[in-house]
Image (cartoon, rainbow, N blue to C red; front, side, top):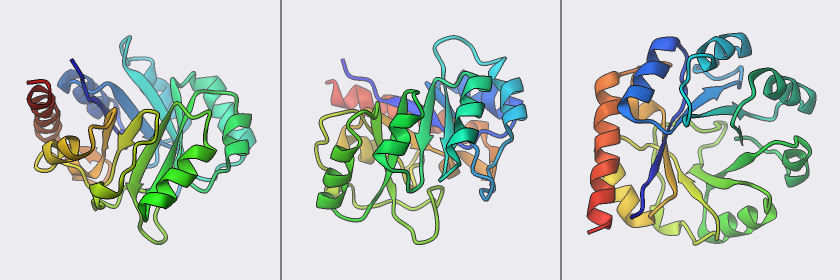
Length: 211
């Protein structure tokens, strides 16, 4: 039986973290990109992570961050996974010395395939909507038909919510889905009802795929 993992990203406070876990999230994403409206400080994340239960992965999102700062934050917070969402090179990602996934901005099928192959050591490849001047969190989907078989776990992102995630899973059969704006009341503030509906929709998609 296959099961699509669920990452809820852009967590900014204790309540949203607890609600995400209660709704069934497998991973919580914390955004360390200071230009993002969902930015959260490492100090705040440390307090939240202290309350995250076993078997829920904590993920730190970085965008073109100085290597020394990434290593410092990882060491202090003991993050389960690092997500590089900028223009980081394979050499940069590998030099961190920590399990990571690399986000790619989808423009065309060949581009996704070529870029993904260069990140051989990534635990997963996250594919997000390409928007000029933005590093994710746009609330827009991309053409799922351009997603190739990458030979490793794929995390599908970009404009997902409870109304379209079933179709997205049916079309791409990803290892995991990543949601942020699709479960928000406002930027950086999650809606527990939307999170529950999203998780339920993912589970519904999995049941259909396993029939």
